[in-house]
Amino acid sequence: MDDIIEDARINRRQFLRVVSFTTGGAALAPFISGYRPVNDLRASRRSRFYSGTKDGKVLGSADGRNWNVVTNFGPHLTVREVRLTRGDWVQVTLVTGDNSFILRSRDEKTWYTPDYVAPGQA
Image (cartoon, rainbow, N blue to C red; front, top):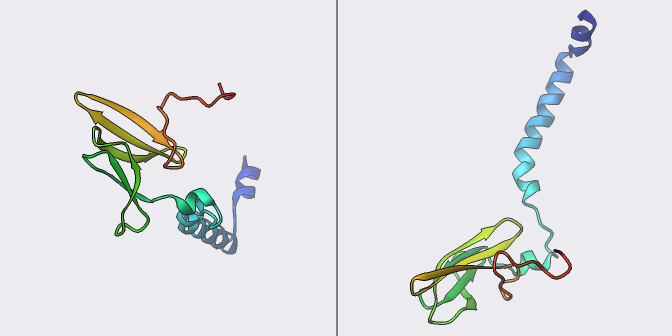
């Protein structure tokens, strides 16, 4: 048992090295994990902020100031909620009368129901 304890001891320089690497890694982790290359077309064309309207439009903005119509579902639908979900899906909750349903999209143009499975992936 004494051999294990003796092997586990480190000197001051080794301790400071381990602490500095751990602290530096923790400080850089948010920047590294959220990094996406500029040439990633999906990330560069995609809106970062979303909003829905009562007349069925989904608005998108890259900076939160300039808003563009991403999709128009028509005036008979109300967009209750727009959010980003796992796997880079944009998910909208639409309401018509007393009924509501959910659609999702990865490219802001083609919309699917949540239980959709692409052909060949079942």
